[in-house]
Image (cartoon, rainbow, N blue to C red; front, side, top):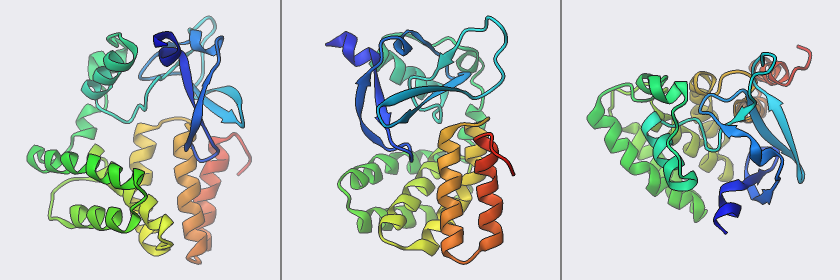
Length: 229
């Protein structure tokens, strides 16, 4: 059972939402890196391996076993708990991007960090009204925190998700637009998570009649996927 837990993959849909788990023995041989050169995407049950940057000849193919949008300490803690190893990749050793993720006054972001699990519980329970209310109240507090702070970013993303479910399109766009620059910072290259975020914001802009902005946003999705501008 332990071997299955460590080697299975979370199967996701076109919007990177979890729909199940699956075993793919050959791909499970890939090692982990917090700065991987490949990502895994799914077309139905078919697993596809996509490069997210140029790969040198004979360079090892790597994927991230976890979400890379987390601090070095949080990533290492999750990897030790779930996969039983301590990550010593370059990003963990240098704590790359941790400064950006923890930007702002520590007391303020620690308070925000403590609120994230509560909002995620409301999301799991599909209590959208309460979820959005907590997001809004938390984000409206006078904090000197930039949008690239990890916990501000998580709250913005959760707020957008809740507003979409409530058909509060204008509010959803306000939250979503603020996530784009930080997502570019943390999901560099043609990462599918960033592509999905751009697609969501582009659709919201289109819905609000912001046609030129929507076109610019959706063009970025085309570039990420290797399409034409």
